[in-house]
Length: 345
Figure (cartoon, rainbow, N blue to C red):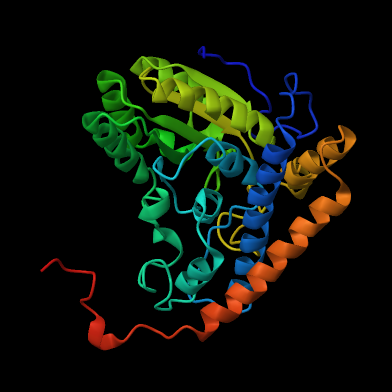
């Protein structure tokens, strides 16, 4: 892997522009796996957004729709003992790592069968059994956590790796720079994955960073970086795969920047503000929808059929319907247990 400033797609450029030569499609099994991971994220987020807007879920959500290729492509390289840390927009990472819909929805509904017993909500879902160290409501807060996990793995002599996911805005936070510096000095098995969707909440990248590419920051910490098209799950898988292989072999940290885009506003479906980006920009990026692109390419190359992809959508929708019913029938936490799992004894 080499440090590069070559971009696949610019953060806020017209989404139809030319990209690098496409990565060859992997095996049929991998293609179907990538597709299923992305569809699971898309449909979970779509349903969660619908439930929130309808007043059936408490609180608010930061939806991952549009960025599915990053989580799916990255996670397809990982084992259960590889660990990740997430962001406030973390549902996609959890689902792609193997989190189950039942516990996910129960947590969003604030019920005891949720991953955090109904106490964490949208921004704190975790499942240590699959290496999901948790989402984080603090911008950049998960980055040092993943670096700590990588340190522990190296200390124990294990070959597992850690991936902190973060956005372009979080690369301005001190936690990122401190963690990257430590990872570089100690040559830790960590892959920093920046999901550059072009905006830090409502602020365009050009207004909060002097550099065009977050990947350029890796050189300051002695690590290689690579930029990939975050709307192409196959390309993300290949880029993160190279970094994971390097980290697992003892080569130290890397940074992968995926140029991607969120379809919805910073928060929810209807959003808070409409003035910071145009509808034309949003629609241009949707023309390169990661799921549609993978489906079309796989069918064209004879690796899968439209019927097979349709079946995946149907199966995921059925799983979601059953899981929502399960979650709504799960009890609320008992106020008598307010200190349970909060304080150590």
